[in-house]
Length: 144
Image (cartoon, rainbow, N blue to C red; front, side, top):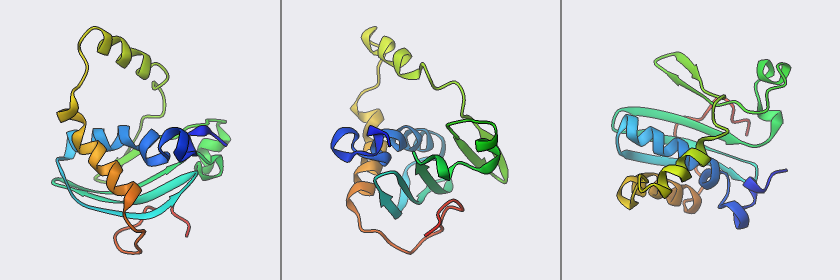
């Protein structure tokens, strides 16, 4: 498995992969009102976040067995998707150069500061430190 699931190397799934999505969600849907964790394991995590303007059931995994069948059949190794008002938006492609582009902008002085990162870092901190709960809406990919 990947180093991304090793908390001592990456901070774990929610920190390494999830922080980008939590950042996007706070920019789109506002501040977090509620945060519940249903699963926190080395290779996957799941929970429920309620924002000012959205309820989000989230699931993160680096286990290829968690990929939907139609994605596995296409030999696709990643699957990034969000469903809003019943409409799925898949955005699995186009991520390969984002870190490089981001670092280039930071070196030019166009990076983001602590205030912009505070919400997503707070979400990750809570996910990493709170107790697992059976409460809250669960993601359909969560099989526990």
